[in-house]
Length: 184
Image (tube, rainbow, N blue to C red; front, side, top):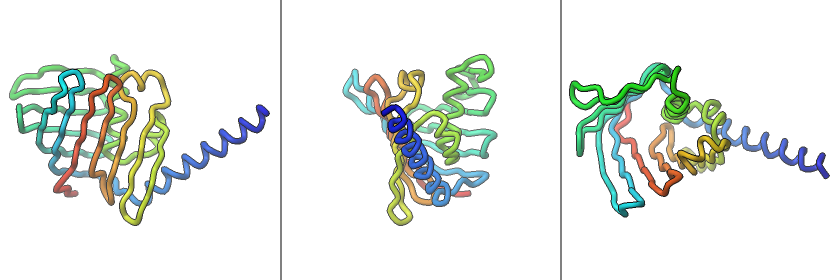
């Protein structure tokens, strides 16, 4: 019986790996990408939504710029080494990934999602995908209790590019991000 369970888990593991491998051939991961975003954050405790808009840009494996324009202008800059939050000329926070395991984890996951690095994402999530023509969806389910304390599930949708992220936080909050006007 144990052998059968082991064999079944190995087959399922290979199926999941093959499943996300199909996404690699469909989703572009250019060296540079920029565009606009529209974000809706649902706060469960307040039963309220906060809408924000802005611009983003990335250089694969080097930097992600996230510039919120409305409702309050702010900037988030992620590199493999740090996460910096700014408002105007003031640095609100600076987290070094080398000294902060949570910052390192968030940076690694964010880079993986934004740049369609499915192998990196698979380090943290079980990936269940569905492909219909040139459109795809992927549901990411955390594989570790550490990640489950932050996020319970992530849904990704797209075509050649990632077009939408739906993040379900452990506390009931949800964030929907739509990417528009994407350019290399």
